Image (cartoon, rainbow, N blue to C red; front, side, top):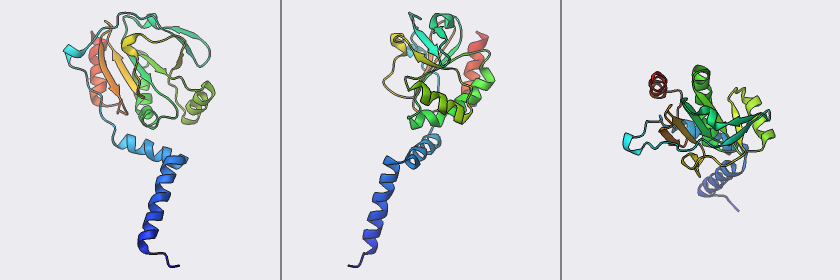
Length: 186
């Protein structure tokens, strides 16, 4: 039996798809693709900006320390829902870390996941991230719930949602920094 060129190409195509779907190689390829196609987050139109009515939400950090979201009221907040198994989430983490390094003392950063805490700790350690990771103890306010990962919110001091972004984004962009600077001056 002689294998023709077309059969080799088909076999290589099938093997490539299997690698992408079922191996760590595929996960890293998806992360790379998400980084390549990430967008800059943009401020929502004023008419679409809604205000959070309730800050009632209980979180716990990786060390077991409780965090009450009401303490974020009156502050500029960047809230990111993510998971270690989500390629777009992993793709945007370096830009979020850079933004956190620059604004961590002025903006309340919350990186919320419902992943296994041990997996999260290993991921953060392996990547050498210092992001403040939290796990939800109660459901978030209704305006801060999304079915998609990653979803990131930027909230102004008055509780108004200025950015609601789903999918991988370049958070360390000039556009995001300009928005945060403006919100911090208000």
